[in-house]
Length: 249
Ligand SMILES: Nc1ncnc2c1ncn2[C@@H]1O[C@H](COP(=O)(O)OP(=O)(O)OP(=O)(O)O)[C@@H](O)[C@H]1O
Image 1: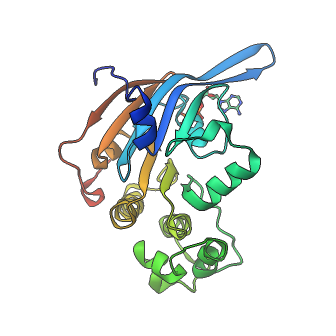
Image 2: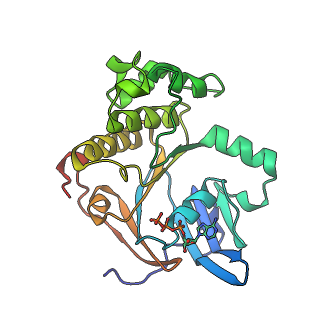
């Protein structure tokens, strides 16, 4: 087990220089009489361009944390700063702009529009982004440019997930947030999807966070952050990053 250390740098420097700085983040869901403590005081910094895996068992609070970083959910208490700005003070329209302009999301299920081709699914985003990639260029990043005219039903689960990654990165997001991106895939297709995420992180420089309960995936990260019971239980830096193509589980 890693030693329990806090991932956050205290003080203003950390907040200013970090892509994300979470401070004492608590999330409690009140379910009738029962309070579910999803996050119990998370301090965390994510740095420009890094590839981080947030690793923890089911129910440890990973999705809750990712949704808060992505501006999809708000903490019960505590603050999150995005590049020095207090995300937790943003109003709804500022949050919408933040998500639209800066964040790429990849979820376990691909949510592609069945009646649109791969290129058209990606173009939905590039049409509203200020400085997008060309949709075919985004598909080439995930090695699917040859499939641009295919519909989701003509592609495997792994290919559909790579289209979802192309869609997420086509706006050149500052951050790429991936929630169990290989959760619905077998090992072989999972590796192709992780390879696409690794390539996007390297080529576009988007700060990338992948949450998973699969410890093997942690080997491809710059930094692994362990989450347990709604807290950061420890972190470690990989001295040798493993290419996605070398992972096996
Ligand atoms: N909308 C909600 N209402 C009530 N409880 C919730 C809600 N969302 C999450 N929780 C609870 O918060 C805790 C953390 O959930 P979360 O989904 O963040 O964990 P996770 O680590 O992502 O789990 P998994 O790997 O299974 O997706 C769990 O106990 C969960 O049941």
